[in-house]
Image (cartoon, rainbow over all chains, first blue to last red; front, top):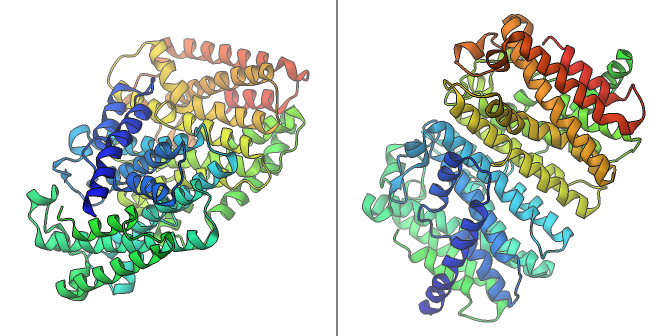
Length: 294
Length: 294
């Protein structure tokens, strides 16, 4: 079972990295800006979001010529959000994926601008898809904007910052994560569905899958922050506790959080029933998210 | 002559403001984020960019149903750039249009996020145009991204920051402004041309117009920074000198800068010959940019 996903990741990660690199190496970007953008894009992310786009298409049995570009656009948005989230006025993180954060290397001004430009580049990438029908391209742009803006990812970051040092309910905590990480993760799966032209029923099913793995991902993140070392995580372990953030282990206890994780894991896998195969890549991805220890 | 432009501005500014307000008042934006976004969007900008979109269409004699939405999208990009440019790590400005800057009111984190979300909202607005052909919509999105990203506006801001405390040549100074303010101003005119379906020759002419008023606008800005008071400008006068920025008056002297201003003013108006009328709105706009004292 595991082997199939490993092979898929091994095969596609370099393709995603190459696509990102090609997009970023276009001419006429000031050298320092390009360096700052490249630094964070190539800072060792696992490419979970782009891999989910490609996995969705593979599970649906559809080949879409622009899939890698769409996948890369999402990673550009994700990368911009990490750079801005790490800034001193936000989460104030010095370390990300085991490396100094963008502003630690390039300074705050360039880090902000690199994030800004990565966001723009994501939309430019989608608006330049060579093989996708215009109506579909516009739908991808519109949904990426909704997922990542004031109704989605940015909303989640605002709620997250405002929730610090407050005691949050499970519902409030879920609202933060559905926005902060869930909306973009859901768009990964939905964009695969759009490229594959699936019907409304199937779209509903993969959306449910996406929301559940999004929450599972966050719960596992919170659990790892309590149970891992900084070295294992590549970022500061225990940072949630020191920043007095409400986390799943705090609201539910460590055992309760693990139960909640299993609950979302199960719902995610049940949503994939329509694929009529047990070893779909998306099912294996759900396992991977739950079992990861980094 | 002047009256026609005044009437045009008086008629269209409220329509632009209403469109912006409608876009921003959609539900589900966290209250604080929405407040920060609204604050800068309604901070008393002159709406020069959206007015240029509408003026281009009016001069071309074309009605485009989505013109106000396109105009608003550009203003959202412009507003995001002002919020980020004013941040302590960038230009560190406390005052903008006579009011405290966004981060002074809402704090740095929310100011960064409000800027981020305004950028996203601009692309969402374009991807939601109800009456424009999909191919045209995509072209608008692609060109707005190019104008505002790592090859355009953000590049200009990077070059500007890097040029501080250095002595720049006229050519280097122009490169900064062609990117920092020129690219987005040019897109205003070009987007009007796209909505109006003009041919390549006319597009070339209005692009030349746009680049020249862009440079004229910046030269006048630099001149005003030397010759006006803080009260007249609504921002800190003399800030260029205190930040040791290279400006047109520094490179060319005050009289030389005025000559350069007139040079671009003339070129801009000559580019409008194809309109075959002396009192086009765009020609009046060129006069307005040169004669303004705020």
